[in-house]
Length: 203
Image 1 (cartoon, rainbow, N blue to C red):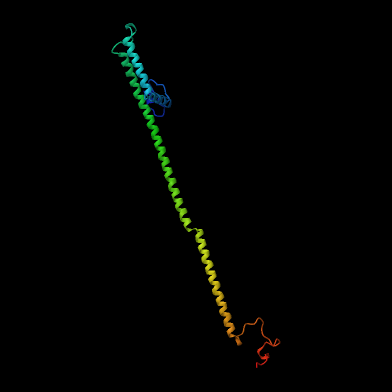
Image 2 (cartoon, rainbow, N blue to C red):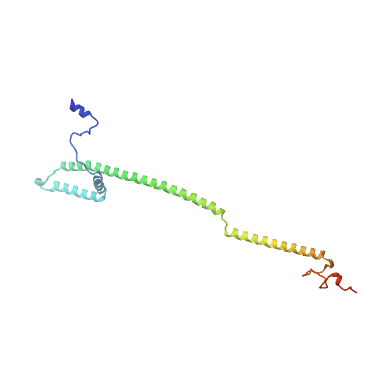
């Protein structure tokens, strides 16, 4: 009763009973299985298998009866070929499973890289669009030249208008002066004799 309760307790590790099989490294066994499956899928294996079967048939048919180890109907050969086929099929399936696992991992890696490349491409596309918008707002060389030429023309026109305005003002000042003579460089006074009352009377 006590042993049964102890066996039903969940707080103690369960001790497995029965025969313990030897542990095999799956990676090493898988590589070994792939090597056998790869060698069985070559033309060289078929050639060697044909030579072995031909020698088997020739020895058990043409050799003396006392030395024949597998006489006609070749029962032992059939057993050997059956054992070979029974082992070849699981080895080939194991190699295919490992290859499918590698293909799945490679597919996931390709998908991850494709996702990263897509994200990088979208980021670069956004950056290029932003640069184009920024370059559209930056003044180019031709734009600066045209603006400088326009400003130079406006300055020339302003200078010409200022000169015309100064000329009109000078003309008005000359017209307002008595006698309509040329403007003097110095003010008139009585001492120099250039005042109108100090001038001698004309003829």
